[in-house]
Length: 492
Image (cartoon, rainbow, N blue to C red):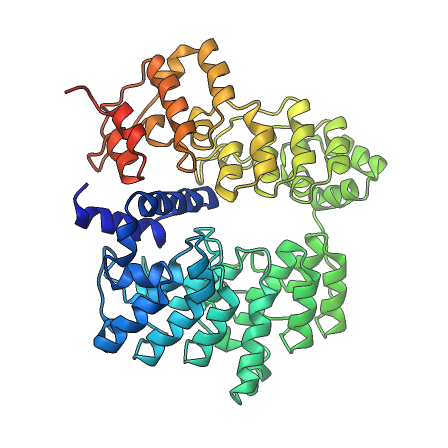
């Protein structure tokens, strides 16, 4: 690979942007970058951006003394400023962990802008967005997240960066940044921002005000600590809905009751929410009864309304909360393990998204379709587990799945060997210029070679080119897997 392309590939892999989605894809990108660095150690000193990315504080300091303008110079394959490369890298190198904050300080001292951004569709991705991670890409946080966030905010990053507020809603803990933002606002003498009960400084556009956004999130997740903090800090318990919120425009109290979040509903009332008589529909009442394990109430509802068996909400709720007891009750009383919504999502998809292994085991034992594909993201339950990198769920579903794409991607060679011995034609699967030979595990070249040999032995075509014109060998080479690329290269 030419030196310029090699450098570009290293930086693209070391600093994944919005095109890399899912924890497994991020892990693969990091392994690619590390493999390229091990094969070509000179990359670390090949340019200013690579010194920043690899944590070479001595090299960065020397370069900035000689040319301070480097701190704001755009370059590399992404045309980013160095501070963006630093914030988006995730290389597991000791110098990165030890020096990232100090290097960021050097860049800022030399004139780097903490609010610099690149566009991801219609969204601005700033260094703060990069350091925090999460979001639809399911990006892991930077290993120096807290230190970088503190420094960036101290140097003028937007305290109320709407992309940050959006992204942390995808993580497991949205409260930590609220605490950081509130403390910083108070320190800056901007505590009055939070006196507005709608928290308009955190306005989320069509999703509603900042207060509505965070209270909706608390209800959706059953996050009592988040709800309590928001309400204790003045969020309006009756914040009106946005155009595109999670809770279908309902008042927050109503939504909490319907979601079975009784403790959050009580918190809302204590903080002044309007008390209304919430009339749950029959399916919502049935779902509540199932979670209470009230078999008689569930049975009575189904006898009166057998059509409720076509509504997936009760089983979905049990799956999301990893309640195999409630799920078993519903299945025993007539629910199909494959009851689905309008996008063909099944309870097994929901269980997979939440790593609800106990419910998934039950659904599989009751005959759930293992590889059903929903129509929103076009993913199987295994694909969901791979996206979130829920390893216990991956290990469970891999023992049953016939999704050779996902099985290859996560390196389940024994299962692939078993499937291909039963159905050799699966070795020739492909479509849209893609083949599983292009989606081998980037973490382990030896395992990738073993799987590639298996597919090749069953007729896989290594000459297929994807829409970008790459063969499987080209992709392997770009990932630094030279032995795999040699195996997949078409004969001369």
